[in-house]
Length: 372
Image 1 (cartoon, one colour):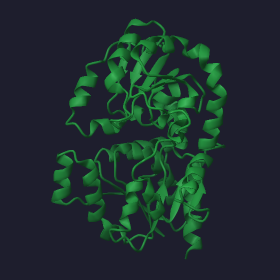
Image 2 (cartoon, rainbow, N blue to C red):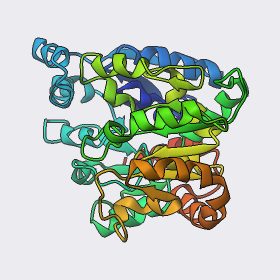
Image 3 (spheres, rainbow, N blue to C red):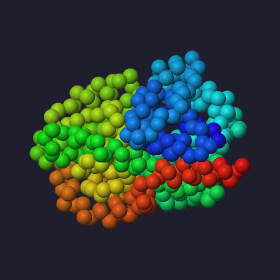
Image 4 (cartoon, rainbow, N blue to C red):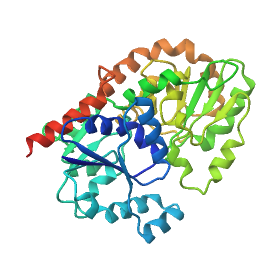
């Protein structure tokens, strides 16, 4: 059985799927090849295999036409992604299964992908509605982390019991291997808060809160601060945002704009306090329940909105004046939110935490065997 894994976006996708590809490759009669779009994906895949003590897999760049290359230079990455998929349909039709972790890959069938079974290995576990979520219906099999997303997708008619499996969160397997070699990010050993803003413009809290946050932490004595935005923020603006963010570096503030640590759960596992808006990394942070604060500068009416379920796990702040008191009171108020944190985490991932990579590989083999 020939299986292709495609990484059509930034290298963060590696931490969700590479361990599954390795598990599949170790199974009898499974021939796995990985295809990548971003060149630095190779470095991350190599790192993951080294940490997992797993052999390298066959690795190929996705073919890009001159038009796709121009779109990438122009930072039109959404358009470029679609064109890259179209450019590679003929190549991917050589496989029995194509595994992707991006909804966008669902459009492959409309582009002429007609031989392989199309498999979605979901990444992230947040509550946010995604514009191309409707493409989930195009996949022959969808592998999901837990009950929460399964219920939501069934309610929306995107999956059925026959087209989906709950397998847990393979990224936890990668993290379990990585954590043994982690270094603490600050020499002074003080606890740190993690600020993890999303990249979506209409939901991103950083334009309003970034400078205020850095000021609070640079003058306080309790916490250091790690600023680790979603990596997509740095692929659309010709490095301008990266330049301005890195100017915020200080002895108490670490700004990460692209290291593996912002992708592999280093920060979400070690932080004492989470501050963010809508990133699904909040659920990774909840593997160990801790205080969190959510920033809502747009004053969204979020109560009873399922896209903002995670905002029930901590205080929600709308104004800069409320920021410092919320940070100072976060530990004392954590007991108010811990029960809902534990409930939502279990609904999102379930238990056991480890073994998701193996369960995903077994689900793929079982599915492919039954349809022969």
